[in-house]
Image (tube, rainbow, N blue to C red; front, side, top):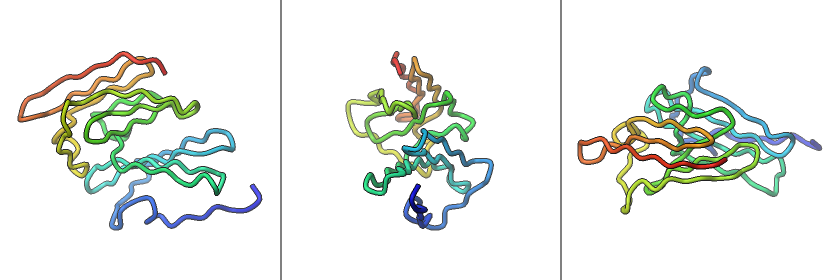
Length: 148
């Protein structure tokens, strides 16, 4: 690289975030980009940040990640997983290919600082997305066959 890329950590995470060196991972894709994955120790909230090595490409960040650092989430190596209020997304780190699973026909009320109030568990592979939701006090298993 011609020069160093610098970043203030507050650009990618909320202030007051507590990190544990055992709950941080970085996955490089050649000289194009890297995915930084970590959890907040206080809340368990998962974060993903795509650090493009080309300054013009910018950064991508998700503060709604389901990470491999959470013992209730099993994420196959080479994949990242994040959610919004309607879908769970699974992305191949190298190819960028994305698969998604519809969680409900309405937007869920998810507090990502208390993720296990809605997501009991997840098992994510290149061939399958499985999540067990908690909605209105009952468990709701959801599953979809994918190809990544």
